[in-house]
Length: 406
Image 1: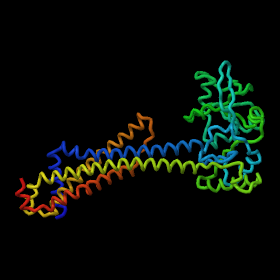
Image 2 (image 1 turned 90 degrees about the horizontal axis):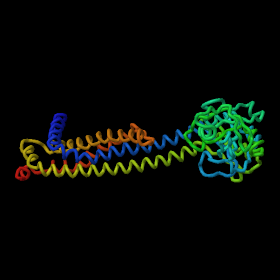
Image 3 (image 1 turned 180 degrees about the vertical axis):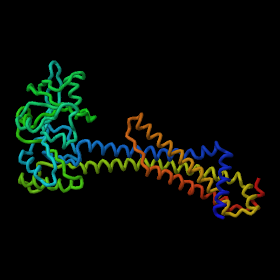
Image 4 (image 1 turned 120 degrees about the vertical axis):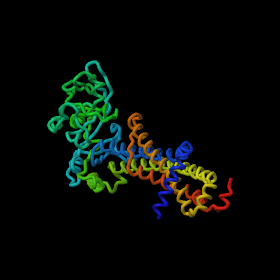
């Protein structure tokens, strides 16, 4: 019986909607815009979060960086370590590498120098490191081979160029491998060109053996930083604590409050970035939800008008035996159909907009199944909530008064 009543209500609702397609479309437009905005805006928020995660992963997996000096916010990578007073020693590097929770380590120091090739001059950042750098920082050569332990141990004057540095210094149509360049007047042989990271600062760097860097560039004996890869992403907090404890012991310091180093943890930066992106996504979703509410108000308004226009029809139905529940179901189904139709069209529009943002706008956008379900659920609830009062009002009409209505 209930299914028959629901079927009749569905058929009458469709007939009413088809009878005024223009008005029905305008009624659903608010829900369409709201659902579409919810999909597109949350896709942008999710895309921003994903872009941050991928950017951090591109720096290296399970990455910890031990810096000389005092902590400076949550930044994982200092863009320039040339202004850091080095405090980390070869003994520190050896002690960190010996910890059970540490997989690989790589020292790092940098300096800004003048690079020269034939008649070309270019200022570059020279990074001194060792053969483990590509593995720790997930940055591998695109051409040639990164210098190995033999070159580091023998203080060979060799260099790996960033993709941008190779073009700026050597030229776009010249094979840089084997080229002789000068860094602060000292000769270095190019042995590799690194893959592009899509970052002008990183891609403009030049990497040389840390031993050659300390002897020929900085003239010091200590490192500005040590890159560390933990054995497991689930043990990064424990690895950080072990590194801090070991360095405090070696430097004879009472606590991290007095430390001349600090450890930047990839998890901290990722957590902060995800929190910001999550807040951004919620804000955008809230704006879209307001659009859905406005669309719901539009549905309620038009349904109230519809009840008024069809008062006599309602009276005739009741006089022929229709119960208040039948009238309630008819108008409620109509409101839900309008809202869900708008939601479905909005979901399609939102997915298309997210694709367009990604394809033509250069923005990261990721549509999640959760946002689609949420948009559809919002549309359904909007129809039920805002269609409920007009439907209830229709079901409470007095049949005799309704028949007299002109």
